[in-house]
Each structure stands twice: as structure tokens, then as C-alpha cells.
Image 1 (cartoon, rainbow over the protein chains, first blue to last red):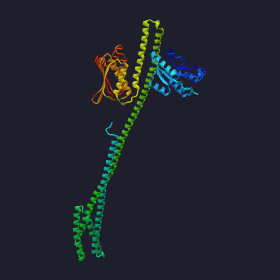
Image 2 (image 1 turned 45 degrees about the horizontal axis):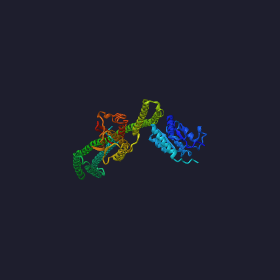
Image 3 (image 1 turned 90 degrees about the horizontal axis):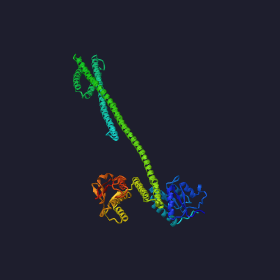
Length: 148
Length: 446
């Protein structure tokens, strides 16, 4: 049995990782947060491959926070791969990125992102964004049924 | 280029050739006709000469018959009669044939007179068997001479007519040969001109193709440049902003967690770091917005600016309910333009008017249009802080400000964005201001 209601943070910027984790803690979101630092690692984690071979494939996070600008495999490609696979087709994925380019927004929604949040620069606003996202996706939102 | 088009050259060339050929045909026909006539005359003259020869022969027969009669040879009288008949018959035939020649006619008349005399004498001799008088001999010779004279005249005429025939035949040949040559030369010249024209056309076409290729290369280069620019601004929006979050976040965390270990100055410095970071984030956003205006595709439609202005005014009022601003708007203001971009432009222009009238208790913002000949000039006017006209040239330059942040906040990119939007609509924008009395921004579209 794996962790219950874990959150997967896909992020390569150590500062952002630190700030995100801090904000989760500040807002009393106690769900365990697992961090992967590039797109390929994110896929390995979710499909239980490579380093994560021993992970339980049924143990899916309750939320994926996905950055777009990632090493190796970009966020939008990770999103497409996840949506193409029946195991992760319904997985709640929130794009969490610095970019507010229209083409990123369009591409993300077209590829099946559940939400798109632009990371604010100011810490107060950043904290507010994390609080809202955490509250909504972990507490309010009903989880999709697990694939058979 | 030549004043004649290829079509006109072709037409002219073939028209001239046709004219020459027609002329040659007409002249040929004419000379052919003349040659035929000449030929007829030659043949006619030949036949007159032949008839005169026959007349000479008949006359000799007649004279021989008379002499034979004198020697009492049998059948002489009959021979005389026959020759006499033939001679008279011939002379009768010759008479109409020489009607064209009065000299010959006179000769013929003389000949006939002499002949009649001769015949009278011969008849008398034959009837009376008297020996011909000595003067009969000269009459015979006279007749013979007359006939020979006429024959000589006809021979002379024959010579003239044969020469004329030969001359006209030659002329006919010359006309046909020269005319056809002229036509050939004309066709050749026309062909040459057409060829030159076509060559020039081919040259122009190949040059056009070359410049099209150059244009294509240029377009590709521009596309590459544009892509690079897009990649750059993407990188700016993403990579340049991300560290700012770290700077702001950790400054804030230091203040929160370790603020008690710093004195007021230290805490002030960290606040300054945070303010500077926010400012830089704002600058990056403004810069990106400025770039986006140039990159977006225009979607032109007919729209009324007044509801848009009202919506923006309401928004401003909600954000700052303490302000009392009078808005003077027309009932409608129809323009052709991109609604999204024009909204951004109005947002900035009205935002400035709103911002710079904040110290005026009777703030007035006016939007409208003026007709200037063919053109319509739109304007946004306020009675705010205004500006000094000597800095007019700095109004639309990005990050150039005419006020300190303490007086009025702002990054100085708003009017630069407005100008880009107006320019993209093919219009112009200019500002007029008086310090402490207000500013008017006028613009055209298309």
C-alpha cells in the first residue's frame, strides 16, 4: 500500500520547489508531496519504470503540478503522453508555470490539462495560488475513478 | 521600354507585309495585262506582215499571169483572175487591221488607187488584147513598192512592240521578285522585332522570378528571425521571471523568519529588494505585452467604441470608488479595427487620463471624433496634469516617462503599446498637452 492522496510536483527549479513545499506546509496541506525534476522522471514515476520500477502502478497521485519548461521532456509532451495512456487519462493535472503565452495556454488545454495556473512572482500571491490549488484539488474536487 | 507593344508590332509587321504583297499583286496583274496586250499587238503585227507578204505574192502572181497571157499561155487569164481576187481580198482584210495607224491607212488608200488603175489597164488589155503600154510596168513596181513600204512600216512597229513586250515582261519579273523580297524583308524585320520583344519579356520574367526568389529567401530569413524573436520572448517570459520569484520569495522568508535578527535598516533593504523585484517583474510583463502587439494577427471588424469606453470607465470606477470623474462620450463611435487590440489601446489611453486627472477634483475625460477632410480623427482628452510639449517626442518611446514614480506611477510602456496598436491599424497618433491643464491624444485608423 502506497501513500494516500499524494501530490506529484514536476519542477526543475530548486527555488520553486522550496517555495512550493513551504507554501503547502504554511497552508496546512499535509498530503505528501513527491518531487520529480524532469519530464522523463515524471513519466517513470507515474508509469512505474526506471528508478520507480518497484512502485505500485495503482498508487496514483491525487494531483500533478506540472511545469512546462522542463529538462529532457517538456511539460506539454509529458501531458500528451499521460493523456494517451489509459492508466493516467483521468489523472488531475494542473499546469503550474511562469509562462502566460497564449500558445502555451492553448496547447495545454488542447492536450487535456485540468487547469492552468501562472506562478506569480510575489510570494504572497504565490502562496495564495498554492493555497487555492491545494484546497480545490485535494479537498473540494472529487477524485476520478481509478482505471480498472 | 519601346512604345510599341508586342501585339502592335506583330500587327504592324504583318499589316505592312500584306500591303506590300497586295501592291505586288496589283502591279503584277497590271503588267501581266500589259504584257498580254503587247503580245496581242506583236501577234497582230505578225499577221499584218504575213498578209502583206501574201498580198505581195498575189501581186507577183498577177503580174506573172499578165505576162503569161501576153505569151498566150493557156489558163493565164484564169490565173490572173484568181490572183486578182486574192489580192483584193487581202487588201480588204488589211484595211481594218491597220485602222490604228493613219500613215498605213493613207498608204493603203494610195496602194488601192494605184491598184485600181493597174486593174483598169489590165482589164482593158485583157478585153482588147492590146499590148500593155509601157507605163503599166511602173504601176506594177509602184504597187510592189507600196506593199513593201507598208511591210517595212509593220516590221518597224513589230520591232518596237517586241521590245515593249520584252521590257514589260522584265518589269513584271522585277516587280514580282523585288516585291516578294520586300515582303520577305518585312516579315524578317517583324520577326526580329518580335523576337527581341520576346527576349526582353523572357529577360523581365527571369528577373521577376529572381526577385521572387530573393523575396522568398528574405521571407524565410524574416520567419527565422521572427521565430528567434518568439523564442527569445518566450525565454524572457519564462526564464527571466522565474529567478525573480526566488529573490522575492526568499527576501520575504528572511523578513518573516529572521526579521527579528535584523535592524530597521536591514529590514528596509530587504523591502527594497522586494520592491525592485516587483518592478522588474512588471517591466518584463510590459515588454512582453509590447512584443505581443506586433506579433498578433489583426482581426478587423466594425465596432462601436463607446460601449468599450463605458466598460473601461466602469472598471476604473469600481477599482477607485473615491474618484469623481465626469465622462463625456458621444452616442456612438464606429470604427474598423481589431476589438482586442483597440481595447488594449483604449485601456492605456483612458488609464493615463484617469491617472493624470487624480489631483483634479473636477476631472473630465472626453472621447470623440472630428472630421478632417476625408479622414476621421479620434481623440481622448483630459484636464489632468498635461505635459510639456518640448518632451512631445518622448511620449511614445517605451520606458520613457515624463513624470517621476512619486508623482504618477507607471512603467512608461503604455503609450508605446498604444502607438504600436494604432500603427498596426495603419493609423497615426500624436499628443498635445499643456502643463496642469490637460492632454489630448488624437489618432487615425487606416
